[in-house]
Amino acid sequence: MGAESMSELILGEFWESASRVRQERFRDAFRSYIVEHLLDKIDADVEVSFVVKDAVMLNQRDARVTTSVVSYGMEVAEIAWTVRDRGSDLKIFDIVRGGVSLVRTFRSEFRSYVAQKGMDELVMVLVRKTASR
Image (cartoon, rainbow, N blue to C red):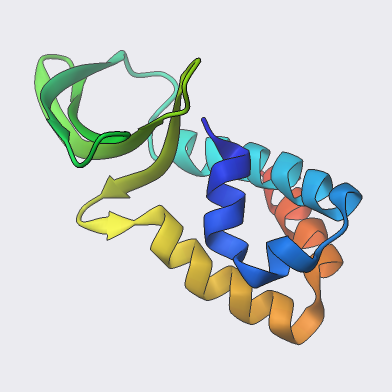
C-alpha cells in the first residue's frame, strides 16, 4: 500500500510542514492502523478471497480496480482500490468501501485532530488503537 502517498493526501499542509522524522512516524503508524482497520472487517477464521470485477483507467497514471470479497462462494463486500502507476511500481492511494473513501474520511478526521492537538498526538492515538486490536 502507498502509505506515504496516502499520508500526504490525508494530511495535506500538515504533511508538508512536518519534519521528515514526524512524517516517518505518522506514515508507519498510519500503515499499521490502516492494515488493522481493513483486517478488522474480515473474520480471521473465515476463508476469504478477492475477485477482480472491473478495472478502469481514470487517467494516464491512475486506475480503479473493483473487487468482490468472497467468502464460501458468496460476495460479502465490494471494495474499490484506486491505484497509481509510480513508474517502477503500482501503489494503492485510496480504498472505497460502501461508497466511502478512506482517504476522504481520514482527511477530514485527521486534519481536524492535528489542527487541535498536533501530529505527535495523532501518531500516539493511532499506535494505541492499533495495539489495542
